[in-house]
Length: 114
Length: 113
Image: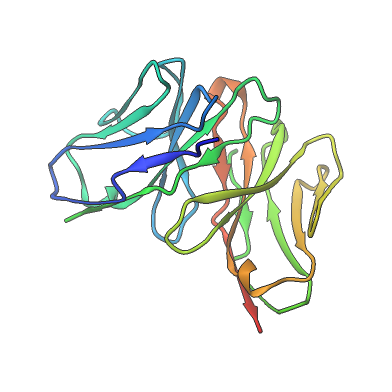
């Protein structure tokens, strides 16, 4: 069974630029969630995708957008990067048919905005 | 409200038991989870408990849930140096929110040899 993978591992961008982060879900999981973890804090929910549709969103502005593909992999896009977007971005996959809804996380992408 | 709180830091000696505490506010939470995060890594799911349970044991881990007080704890028996990490509790919010997890700020566990 393949776990959740994310790419790239690290990324450095300049304020105002755009970035795309990628995630491959665990085998058999059709739901992907994205979280932002600022340094020293717990993860914050950005949004979730289920069968290629957005299925819930946290308190993040529209410049945070996403996609899910037919193979259930996902992208997180952030436009007009700000310094405060510097964080670890975590992707998690889950199987909504499991009543416990547990989410399994990838290793994350560390984004630095300068 | 959506607020999960944890103490910041816990230090124990190797071989002792560790107890990490968490309080949450949403009484509609269906599941509560404990995750472990080692430096520079993602989150590892340790265990979870359904909200109608009081206790769950899984090898060295024991989860206790007091739903009346909205208090959750994770006990690690025979704590080892490899248990040093940040531990997050999380609650699962309603389905309308896309089954989002709300995390606490994390408790850093330091295990001294």
